[in-house]
Length: 339
Image (cartoon, rainbow, N blue to C red; front, side):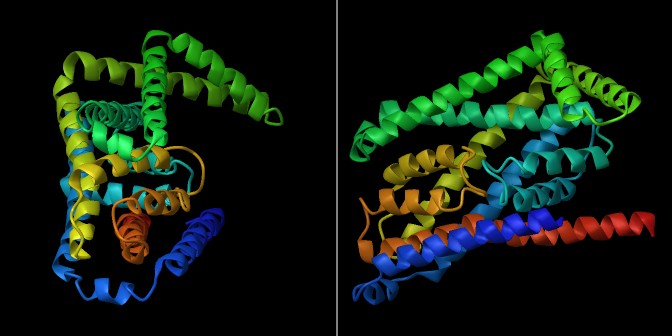
């Protein structure tokens, strides 16, 4: 990792730990030990395994979507790509740092840059669509659970739909009006490279124009001749989010609490949307405070802090550990290539 990334990792982890310590201080009392005696470690282990399964769904999504465009990557390469993405996502707002990592690893697997970019952007689009559908489902079917969380939940539904409409508009613009996108990119390039030599700037713009054309061709290919990739992508995206949501219920059962499947479904959906917003690196603080506030409505205050700590260990700190291991594997791979 670069020094700046390491610094942001320290900031993200440090902020998260500080918030967790405050939450524990405010929630632990004389009843906490009684609740901890009811812990079932097997369900906590199952939560870790379910999260790993979630990562497998993501890896299969990448593999199937890549294969539908005519490129073959192995499942374990795809899984390592996902793990590497987790580390970068943990130190960037809205977890956007993972996208360049996935694009880079697909490029290393001989997927042209434009096609790799199309795959990664299509993943984001599918995430937005699935979250919107899940939000609509929850809004229509789980009305009691939404109402139990107050007006904030309704606001988050509208935010989700706005987010999805915005993504679909950009998606449409990149396909139907690539000339507009090129003009915007060119103006940004000239503005950001004012001190560069003109030949270097022109080379950069020519490369950008070429990759925009590649992206448009790849997206058209998805829609026209790689619909199977979109279908598989949608299926694994749905499985990914459902599996991620279920993980919280498994932790609750492991702590001797009711699974709260319906309530947890709504809460996790809101948290997923919040964590996709560029507020803090790795959504540190946002996730902890949001989970504590909402789960405190359904489980005893004495155990809610413990729950949030374990939940973040599974979905955040475990991700960082996987990302570090994956990054070491990639460094070793590159060293062997140039050795």
